[in-house]
Image 1 (cartoon, rainbow, N blue to C red):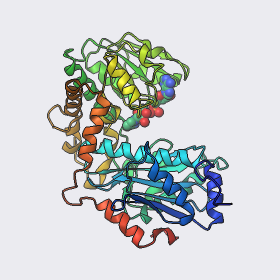
Image 2 (image 1 turned 180 degrees about the horizontal axis):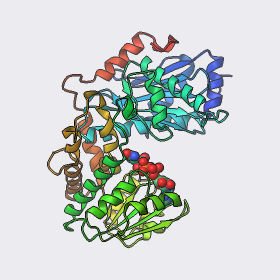
Image 3 (image 1 turned 90 degrees about the vertical axis):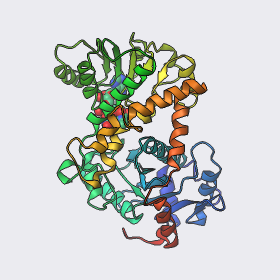
Length: 443
Ligand code: NAD
């Protein structure tokens, strides 16, 4: 039966039933670069190894994927390690619903590559990776006891893979969850201040968006932010300090929209007396795209730039915090470019989330120069400088900016860490050699 089953098209829960039947609790897929093949820990999972190897869309010779089934709540918990030349893989853990095993794997593969690119373009000495957990619909994920157990087991996974991937917070995961991860491993960042972590990254992220906007304005020779009109989608953790900073930069007006009326009220109280036009909208409302403005800042959810919305946009510049703003990274990058709209790639300008936490173990300095340099106009890897470089190269080579940024990020990601070059790959190799998949404890 197992042989004829398409393991990619079943649900994560059906897959877990299959794994239990085969007595598998941990498994891996690693890339054998010498022979250019993906190797699986179990012959029963060869079908998945072949799928990954032949996939042209999301598989980019990822160094390793290590997955366990959580003992208590039947949750697939995985570490997706893309590239570790610049350092161990770093990126957050996403806790999400997936309809099929293929959806789960694709999300992990895609998000891990995204982190390689974001970290490299930020000049960080970290590789790229992502944690992904597939929610089990029969489990109450809002129950704090259940949640604690899920994240502690994820922490055990981190410990068991010996630091080839260092986790952090991401969609579906909050700071309390990170405390539970931290209870079981040292290979995590984004823990609360009270435990020695770096705290909320939203303010530096907002400052990073301002840097991206200033680079785009400079590129278009439009002067400064003063006197400009900015449209902002979402008024949450990043957008609220962003709006405050925009008024400090003397913008003429901010047009903002939000689905949650309480958040609008909070933001209005922060910028009393400023020219803020804030609208409550429904989730599918597209009016913000049609706003008469100089800059549009997407700060809510991803995939909002697509063939429906791009023709509506009146802004000259798009620069915001939301991850994966382009629904299709090639098609929509090109569409914006052909419309003459300057798009500052999201993974370039929203880097401060990972910058803020990535180097927590090196200690803290007030106004830390290693963090502040990302927000200057001078440092060669600052958001401002890299955005200008990307936009100028885009113009000179007639290439959409997202594509230029990815090319540059890819080149940087191939540089070796000056001391621990490609260490993550050595860790992956040693896990395979020591038969990680046969061990059951956290070691
Ligand atoms: P958040 O949840 O605090 O804010 C998002 C806000 O958007 C929420 O208030 C939500 O109600 C609103 N919203 C959702 N859909 C909307 C819609 N269709 N129209 C209008 N409003 C809508 O999240 P955040 O931390 O501010 O992050 C915003 C985006 O930036 C996310 O995509 C996040 O992944 C990304 N990002 C955040 C950080 C960070 O430091 N927080 C770092 C990098 C990237």
